[in-house]
Length: 121
Image 1: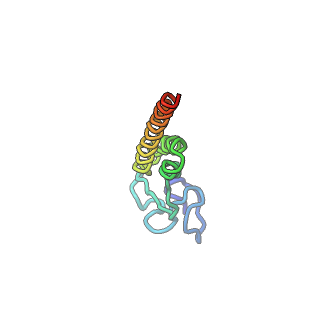
Image 2: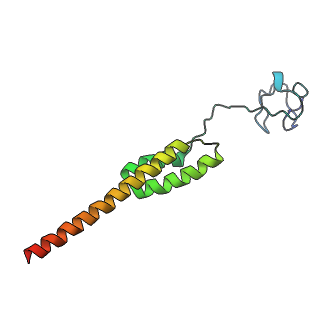
């Protein structure tokens, strides 16, 4: 028996093709499905967009790193059929808000400091 997807020879006791991971028995054997039909097999390993997750986490801790990881996660989401897109966007928004808030706080502290020094002298 050969694998329907990659054509590799399958042993009698093999449950999955060693070449492509397609189940070896039942409806997925050679000739049991129309030619050209692709069967997708979920092997139990879940894909996750790690950069999107890191972007969201770091958005609260270190917004600049959160911004970087979220941008990478958004790029990965395009290649992973949207996996983690929402997390990446949330990380971007939160990072940007924290960075803007930090800039405003620095401006306020500098302005108050200059005003304090002017009044002191």
